[in-house]
Amino acid sequence: MADREREDLIAMLADQRELFRITVRGIDDEQARKRTTVSELTLGGLLHHLISCERHWTSVIVARDEHAELDVSKFAGEYVMAPDETVQGLLDTWDEVAAETAELIWTVDSLDTSIPTPTAPWTPERVWQTVRFTILHILREIAHHCGHADIIREALDGQNSTYSRVS
Image (cartoon, rainbow, N blue to C red; front, side):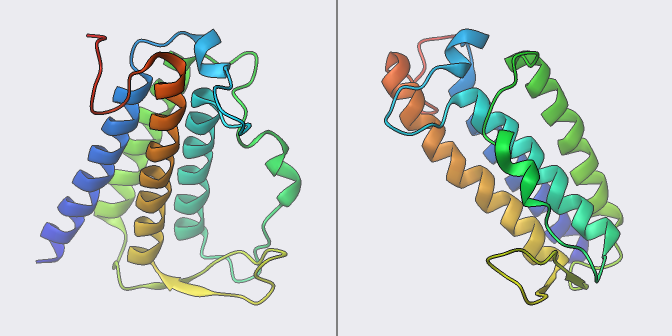
């Protein structure tokens, strides 16, 4: 049963990542940096954030640091596709991160293990949550931003994760 749950978590993460990948399919780096709504969000910026977010939360699972504090100074470029980044490079990096996450899900001692999360200005008290909850948080982040990406892509050229003229 535990193996099935791990398989399901890995599969659901992969499904959500694939929806995001469909949304960015066929765009170039310039389009990935283009704002199409009143929001500052871009497709490239969202992709950059999802990689950063997944790396952060998997590192929290591994470190289990009871004294960790979130470094909010790193947030300045969180939703920005840097000038030296490309869509393909970010997607390749996300593939590497996804493989690391899958390996972690398979090898972590227990999904029920309670881990400390870093404190932050909005959560000054230490919060403990299960590995499972943390993995589900990554899933929620990807799913949440898939919706943002669809809206941005629709405003860019009318395509999204469920309708794409690009092959």
